[in-house]
Amino acid sequence: MRTRWILVLVTGLLLAACSSGDGSSDGRITLRFQSLAWQQESVDANKELVREWNAAHSDVKVEYVQGSWDSVHDQLLTSFEGGEAPDIIHDASDDLADFAYGGYLADLGELLPARLKSGIPQRSWETTTFGDGIYGVPFLQEPRVLMANATWLRESGVRIPTPQNPWTWEEFRSIAEELSGGGKYGVAWPLKEPVSATLNLSLSAGGQMFHRGADGRVTVRFDAADEVVPRTVHDEVNTDGSASSSTLGMGGSDTLPGFFGGKYAMVPLGFSYRQQIVQQAPKGFDWQVLPAPAGADGLTQGVSPQTLSVAEDSPHKKEAVEFIDFLLQPKNMVRLALGDWMLPTGTEALKDPALHTTKDDWAAGTALAAHLRSAPAQSVRGYPEWKDKVATPAFQEYYSGAIGLAELRKRLVEDGNLVLARYQR
Image (cartoon, rainbow, N blue to C red; front, top):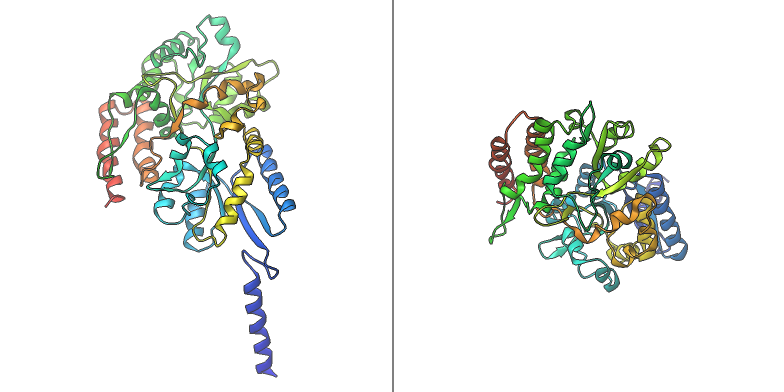
């Protein structure tokens, strides 16, 4: 009896193991989709699309898994190494390089439907291309813009920039100084995370920072074009007094009370911050979206789009890509963009009338879409360590006035190249 009981128990466990995970005893496939949506409108849009997929596909069920931007890199690394990664992975393109080179993500090149591949511009695909492979589908992006107190600017009489006639960086600095005085500031730079903002805006001035040689190795340089944006911020804070030093350690949301309270005329923020402004601004507060300043390369700026990838260990890559293709049909991409208050990468989705309204200044952001390019650090192995250990403290100290430009260059280049060299042996 004891032996028979053990055999029954073992057989039951084996059957349970066979029917768990990504399949079921009736052959139905289950895909886990980890989403990083966090704004309620975005969460609702993602969950609704999952429900629509499941209603139309009885053989492939998608299970929604909630992730968090705050911990996604470490969480994914742990799940990859533990063999428990979700099938479909929501992330940002600047987080993919190490995962792609490490063999954790599937190369989607041969799996992508022609419609999806052709519907997204090549400049966006460059953000998820590492070596010869494509390791994610870029689908949402946002330019950095100037959120401005429209009343303040109108009463000051300064020229209002447009995408067709933007401010130069020199003009922006001059106007920020003109708007300052009496305990008020022309601009507030929220630079708690200074690296991405600095590098991406520097593309407008021709800055690149990372340079790949003929041998494929990447090195850091800090040339004259790379200096334009950092010097502007530094001088506004430390020379002109047109930017508040107290906001340098803030996140974007932290500056909004001061913006609403009339302490800052302008705040450089991501386009999606409009949602918080709409929700939180006091009644009667008049605001508008202005393009970021332009340099030698015009309005060009770097972006790291949100992406959808497939785990290399997923046994159902084909089905996972089919779900991504559904999720990113033009009408669905628009729904996701509206939910996140961001811009879609798809050319057809970008034409949607809902993204060209003057309400909430959607049209002001959509006009900048053609100027968005792959962020400079996109394909650089070791970038997260360079950013955290070298660049972040160096920029923070430079912007606060604790170190000068020569020391900033030394740290970014000399210390930075030591970090990158370890990843390129």
